[in-house]
Image 1 (cartoon, rainbow, N blue to C red):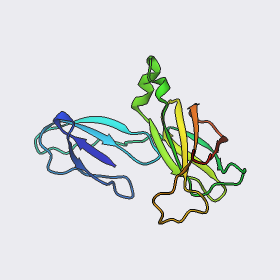
Image 2 (image 1 turned 90 degrees about the vertical axis):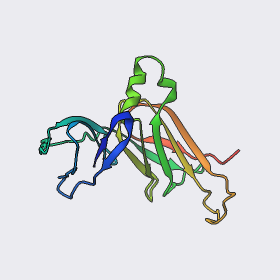
Image 3 (image 1 turned 60 degrees about the horizontal axis):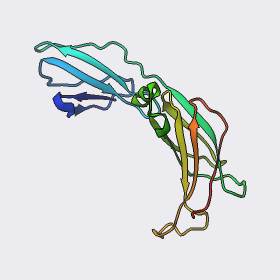
Length: 173
């Protein structure tokens, strides 16, 4: 879905693409446009275009890269599958020093929920490395109880395209 940015980084327009992927941004002023194309599970794509007075600009095909993924399974500390658990991958802050810090600019984060067997896949990731975290309410917790402490799991320094990552939820301290 395209987003157009103006001077100073202000978002000027956002447009949802049609089912076939086509889109139109109307009533544009002449000049250079900075466009950003985003879709969950894919890498963001930035593209520039120049609009002449009362002109139509055809950007051609805009193809978003699926990027890397991390998959695995979330379990409770007793080894049973943890279903419907929030799983987030984010660029590992330990890698922000040196040249690997440039990897944080694209595909730095993604999230999903585990399925009934505890399996998950986070798509649309960049070059990493990543910290992958899972957070779950206790199995027997009342959903209306806001004071419930969550169980957590964390894996650090995870490489993109890792398969079978094991996240074991630990009770709150």
